[in-house]
Length: 582
Image (cartoon, rainbow, N blue to C red):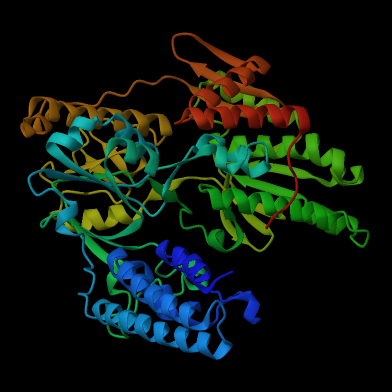
C-alpha cells in the first residue's frame, strides 16, 4: 500500500469528523497501522471542538498535507523510513494544533449562556399560556387544545418536574406485577410536540401574580441522581454563581395550575417515618420490592413462626378506591402467584388488613356497592378494621382508636401503606401567597369561580383538578373530574382562538358543569364493582370484565392500550412476575 493511498484513507475519516484518526504508512517499511498515535492520534482539544471546525478549513488542510505526502512519496520511491514518517506527521500535527488553538480561543471568548428563557423562544406578539403539571388535568388540557391556538394567538409552555403522564387507576396493578410500569406511562413530550408547544422539565419555586412571572429550577439540582450521574449539572459558574444557569423565569398572560395534590398525613405522628405512600411510580416500585423481600426472608429456614407472622402482616390505611384496589391486588398476588412459587406453609401466616374511619369500604360509592365490597373482602379473609382512626404510627405498631367509643389499642404490622387522603401541593401555596390578602380564605386548595378562574388573580390564573375547589359547588378529587375540567378549559381557549377575541375568556356567564359518568373499583379475584348512572350497578365477575375493558381503552394513547391489554392477558395466562429487581 502506498503512502498516498494510506493517507487518503485517513483523510477520508477526517472529512467525516471522527473523534479519532488513524495513522497509516507503507507496510513494506514495517510501519504498522495504529490507532491513537502520531498525527492522527486522538487529542482532547479535537474531542471537544473538532466538530466545530468548518469543512472548508479541513479541505484546505487536507489539500496541503496531501501535496506534502506526494512529494515525500516521490522522494522515497514507494518507501519511507519510520523517521521520515514521524517528521511528516509532526509537521502536520503542528498545523492542526494551531487550528485547534484558534477554535479553543473562540470558544472561550463566547458569551455566557443566559439563565432565563431566550426571547427568541417566545413570540412577543402572542399571549403566553404557562401550564404547570403533567397529570390528568394538564394532559387533558394539552390534548384538547387546538393547534390553531399556538399558531395564531398563544405561546403554550408546559413545565413539570415529571416528564410523563401516569395513569394512576392502574398503579395498584403495577405495584403487584400485574401491569408493567411502562404500560401506564406516556411521555408528556409526545402530545406537546404534536401540537407544536414547548416543554421544560423543571420545578416551580415561586409565583408572582402581580408581575405575572413563575420562577423555576432544574429538578435535578439537589437530587441524588444529579450528584451521581450528572456531576456537572450545577454548571461551572464559580462558588458565588454556582447553579445560576439552573434557574429561570417565564412571564405569562395566563397561568394554568394543574399540579395535583400530595399525600395528607393529617398530622398523625410517625406516618412519614414508618409508612409507605402510594401515589407515584416510585411508590409502586417500592411496594413491589418490599413485598417480595418479605416473602423471600420469611422463606428462610432460620425464621420462627413469630418472625414470619411479623413479616407478612400487611396493613393498608384508607378504604377509598386506591386502598381497596391495592389490598385486592395484594390478595391476588399472594394467593395466585406467591402460593405457586413459595413454600405453602407461609400462606397461613399472611395477614392483609385495611383500616378506615368509615363504617364501609368505598364510602363515596353507592350504598349497595359499599355493602358488597365490604362483604366480599371479609369472605376473602381480608380483615376490615372500620370505624377506626389511626392516632400514631410507631415502628411496626399502629395506635388506633374506635371512632364511637374512643377506646385505643395497638395494631402490629410488618408493612403499612398510607392511602388515606390528599392535601394541597406546595406550588399552590406559592400561588396563594402571591394573591391579594383575603382572596383565598382556605388553605386546603385554591379557590376558583365556576369557570375555574382563581379568585384574586383577575382572570389570569386557572386551576384544574385536585389542586382547586370550585364555587359554588365543590367536586370530588378524582381523575374523572380533572379530565373534564381540562377539556372544558381547553375549549374556552379554543373559542378565543377561533373568534380572535380574548374577552371570551372573561365571560361572566361561563360555567364548568361536571357530568358523573360512573365509578369503578377492582376488588380482587377477577371481580369488580361498577356504578353506571342511568344504566345499572354491576358487581362480581361481569363487572371485572367491564373494568378490564374500560381501563384498557381509557389509556391516553393507542400504544398504551395495547400494552395494558397485553399485560392483562399475560398475567391471566402466565401469572405475575414476582422477581425483585431493586
